[in-house]
Image (tube, rainbow, N blue to C red; front, side, top):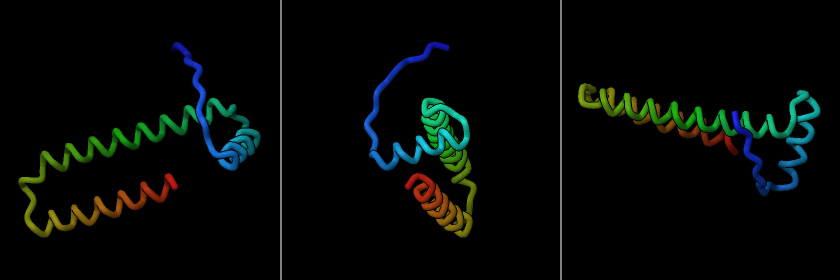
Amino acid sequence: MAVIKTAISIDESLFEQIRKLSEEIKLSRNQIFSQAVKYFIDKKNNLELVRKINTAYSDILDEEERDRLKKSKRKYKEILKEEWQ
C-alpha cells in the first residue's frame, strides 16, 4: 500500500494528549491518526448505510414506528456528537 505524507494543524493540548497516548499504548502518532480517521470514516459509512436502509423501508412504517425511528436517529446523532467532542 502506498504511503502519503501529509501535514496537519492541531491544537497543542490535543497533540500532547496524542503524544501521551502514543507512549502509553505503544503506537506511533501516525498509527493513532490513521486509526482515528479510519474509525471516523467507518462510522460515517455505517450511518449512510443505515440511512439508505431506513429510506428503503420508510414507506412500510406506520406513524408510531416513524416517530420511534426519528427519536432513535436523534439519540444516535447525539451519541456520535458526544463521541467526537
